[in-house]
Length: 427
Image 1 (spheres, one colour):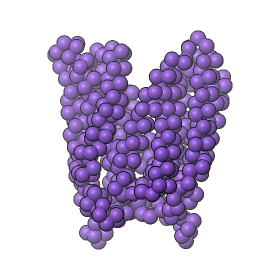
Image 2 (tube, helix red, strand yellow):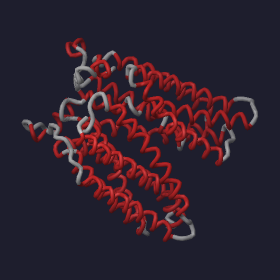
Image 3 (cartoon, one colour):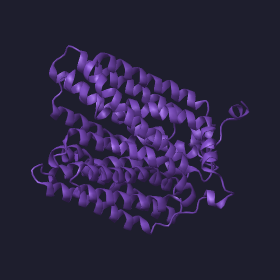
Image 4 (cartoon, helix red, strand yellow):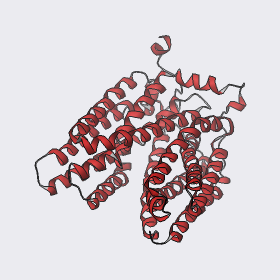
């Protein structure tokens, strides 16, 4: 990595931390703000949360194409300004229509930040430094979310609208400050579609869908996000409260245990996974999460004391955190290495779209199932975790040796990007 790439990477990491801080600063309090503080009711508050997901699903397919054609930095700056305007207007909105439009702008801007920053990391890293760069990104994102949520919680007062207006104004200021930080980043030149003969949007998506390994990774990614992240604040929390009798304070402790595990274990885990096959690391995560769901089953369906149930439930979240720490230096670099030269932005956006779909479907399925049928809920997601292991091992057969274990090609500094094994191409 050159000195210029290192300087750009440091600013990108600042961007990751600040964008996560802004997200954690306000999102946990959106429901209360809309439903109670603005007095718009539970229905409007639920629609606001749905608008976040819908806005992301709409803009992400276009974001990938824009990143490829224009580069990640201009797209990121546009997303930051859009998110800042959405946050500021959300703090001032008093009608349902204004709240929904503001939430759409904020959700769209935040959704585009993720693939833009990921593509900037790809452009500013090499094959042998990419895993560490993405591990740092995940560490800073979790740290930013935690700090943002903690500070935001101390600023808000449900009896004063002005406290929420201040909250959203600070979030907008954070995004605009990030524009200033990143506007002067000197990105290394990487190939864009504009540098080559014109390729239609349909043709580029067709090319992506034709990459069998990328399609399998997207399927695997959907199951990963559906069975883990999609359950944190919906199904798993509902299961803990309804089946295990977990108090709200214990639920907060469980969430803190998840974050603490990530922060403490991230770089220790990195040393372990860097020299392992990526497909086998993901397969191991499936097994760890299977143990997590068994532990959750004990918490809600066992016959131990309430203290034992609480300890088991907190351990469930900690085990999920361990798996997340293993995935952070594995999934995103693999997406980058599967992308043909100059197409990392589109591949990152496609994977972000898959994640967003899983995060939208996960709570809708998990929440009602956990509340009404706790035993089938645990069994279902235990099977999903085992399925992660199976899908990961199958994916490994589609990857080239260097895509699956990039350290093997570190001496030559060559990574086979966007290709599949010879037998796959011949099929």
